[in-house]
Length: 434
Ligand SMILES: [Zn+2]
Ligand SMILES: [Zn+2]
Image (cartoon, rainbow, N blue to C red; front, side, top):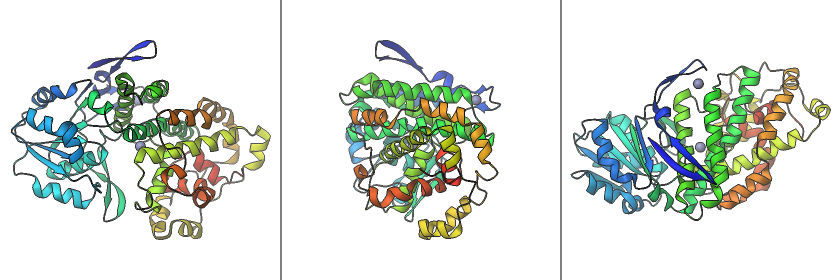
């Protein structure tokens, strides 16, 4: 299906059909997605009954939402597909955890054959987890452009207090009503902008992985996500006024990033060092001290990473050669000092360091390519204006954290949360002195 939006003076078609059609790509992989149908446009909600009829023979339906999303869409959905069960969760302190999952599992009627998640990321993660463990399919009805994970097949859960990515299922279809999404609280939309602009550094880091570790890489997917993030950059200013086309471009970019992860089977198209900073904050700061949304933390991570990368690029070749030491491994004592109780997990994650085997000389040999990629990355000043344009978080202080306490070690510690080569990790492993 195709939606037409205005992007500045240009009229654009946002197409999902080609993205959802299986294809053998020149990267050597067959790109396919579990999502079979996406309807994204103004007033899309009215098409939900026909989408359900089209994708299968489903008759016992259960809508899962919270009190807020019940008001904006859940009530209408339940009426439209009546008779259906509806589970309305209390939004106060609602998290994707064992408690919320238990509540839904207890209330879920016998013999249901399809779940419908109506809400933002948390409601989706609860639903996708329950759906997976009950052997059911689910349909996604997002109510905010807050995150790229709607179509994900893993759930971001907090299980017995620990943040975990758990196996779950992707929706078989999505009905994204731009009218509803445009009316979501601005904080949620701004968070989506943070998650989306984070693709700039995520894609740069993927290129670093390809350059130095010969990692799997897909030009076509990189190109598609790059175009989507540029569209969001160009239309971000109109989000505050609820401009439908700008909201559609943001939602399209987020969903596309989610599909790109399914196509490649890895999170490279959507997650790099900016996400590692976000994960590090989630792992080490209790949620009572920082209740920032995922995209808010990613936006802050993006600002920090952009600053680091541009500062690196400001040095001359000779200065970089001088400041780059030989490879050093993160020692056990350093990891346990920084991660405390999580040290064992971090140590296991990094047992086969992705940067081990790379030499200083190899880095210097690809320096012109690294420089070219950094030059194409928006500067911290540009990113700051973009995040300001929609009131998004930009600094550690914006998400309630102390720069003095966190910043000194952040660039050295955050890359260790995932054993994945990024430029931030490279600078850490080769002790680049700033
Ligand atoms: Zn490909
Ligand atoms: Zn994200």
